[in-house]
Image 1 (spheres, rainbow, N blue to C red):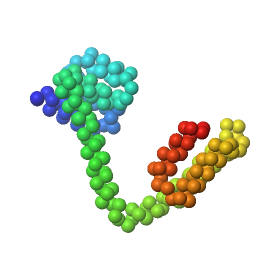
Image 2 (cartoon, one colour):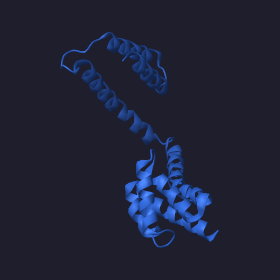
Image 3 (cartoon, rainbow, N blue to C red):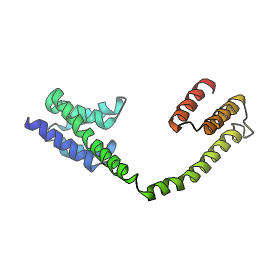
Image 4 (cartoon, one colour):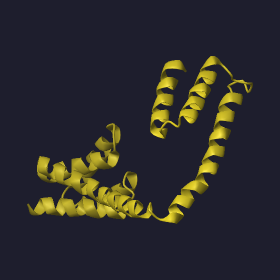
Length: 174
C-alpha cells in the first residue's frame, strides 16, 4: 500500500508541476528512476509509450505504475495523472459558473460577437474566392452550404446543431 501512495503522490506532483506530455518525462525521470524503477525500465517505458497511439503521458504513467506495482500501480498512476487537471477544470467551471451572472461577462461576450462574426466572414470569403486556382469557387457544394447556413441563421438554430449539420454535410457533399 505504501508503494501505491508513493505512486499516487509522484503522479499528482508531476501533473501539477508540468504541462504533461514530453515535458513531464524529465520530471518523471528524476522522480521515478532509482526510486521505483531502473533506468532501463524507464527508457523502455518512454519508447513504448511513444509508439503506441494515444496520450504519451498517460501511457507512460500506466507503464511506470505497472512496473512498480502491477495492475493496481497502473490504475493508481492513471488516477494520479488525471486527477489534478480534472480538479483544476472543475474549479475553472465553478468560477465561470459564478461569473456568468456578472454584467461585465455578458458585455465581454457581446463585445466578442462582432469580432467573431467578421472573422467568420473573412474565412467564408477565402473559401469562396480562394479555390485552388485562385479564382471564384462557387460550385453547387459551396452554394448548398451557404444556403444551409443562411437557413440556420434565419431559423436561429442552436450553434452546436449547426456545426454538427455543417460537418455532416461536408462529409457527404465535399
